[in-house]
Length: 633
Figure: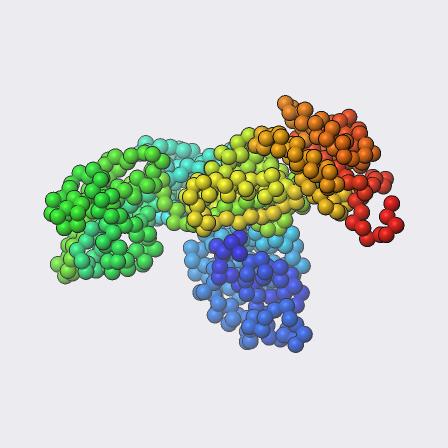
């Protein structure tokens, strides 16, 4: 399942049948393997496959799984888990996430690798699935701040050298932390809570070390920190450097690697800031180049000669032009890639070429490598973006499905109408990008979400009710199609929600027990003559009708016209329910009849349910018979 794919392979451990039952919902949702001791295996037990029963000691079994799994979920005593995993722990940058769930499923504890192993995020997701309370003990959690060793992860930044523990401690204590960001997205800055400890500086502006308790550099430059300094410092490296490569046939991976590292060192560039490698298309299968990219997990971008020769470069070569049909390979390829990761429509100047071509050879190795390095305006995330189209139901948190809550918790960015965002605020967490757009900017919301997802972020687009019923799902998919979407990247997953007509119906009984339809009275996107035809058809066909968007401040005639049409085909005594803000604090419910409909206050937050010829009111309830009782009134 997309929701838990970042944690796979994922394993769960239980030692009792009760613990196994507690974790069982996760087996289907997260597609994890649940392990139980062989001692609890009985012939009648069919809820766990046979291969998930282990023999021997649990300590030995965990040790056998440790290196090959990214996350462990234990449902047993915390102390027992600590003793089991203690001999296996090495470093927070490599240890898997470790979660502990109590046997009754009330608490989910992030025990180990909370930040870099994403155990905190996993604990939140599991808690939402189980309806439990997440227990997070990181220093930044109580301050509503993102963990400093996590802020760059959504954008594909690489952690560089520095005193990460010291800087994290300064953040946790609320001390002044200087941030010097030279490249990379500043979205993380724009979504910090009031009173945060960060002080932002620009470029190479000098900072008085006495005025800050810690410092963060966000740059493609490789800095060497003095071990004698008392000021804790760290560096993040956004992946903005595109390395153009030209090489002779048969050049080894070792020489290519040496050439790139030496060039970066000579110009004080961080190897971790490399976004990818660019070259001419005839080098796409060059063994040394392919092996280097695979070993470093870097993309290899190739371009035909006609594309490369259209680029102005500082050092063209007639020899290269005669050989491959373009006067430049390394410089041109680096610039082309940097342009494609810059602002749309921006022609990247040659000044973006940080390093002009360098030719590197080695006495003990055949071949030669030409290296050039350009910087892009936007970093390469290295991730496949995801769009989560989420229906949040009528408004209360307990009316949102666990899957939808988990999707919202996992998302890097959440986009929606401000009211809907406000309603789900308790599900969101520090470090998420939260973008609120006005109610009239639905298309802008869709376009912004697609932009971020194409960049590589996981983006949740929020709709009230069900996202696929008068919600954002259709618009997002339409926009994707218009942009030439291949149906795969970015990935899309739809999370349904309780829609307005369902919520309204549940507050008044069972008015939708027989055939029904929904009609929006908003003619903003649908011509009014089409809406009138649908009203007439539905009224004649005796559907129970749910009216969406019945009346706004400026649009008041449509409801009166709809009322007139309905009275042509329905009895004036037809039951109606007017439900405003179902399940929210300001909920209002009125049961009446069709002839009195226009006497009741109705606005855009109202859903109107109009019964069919069989619908009846009984006290405070509205009932449409399905036909089970022969003598139904």
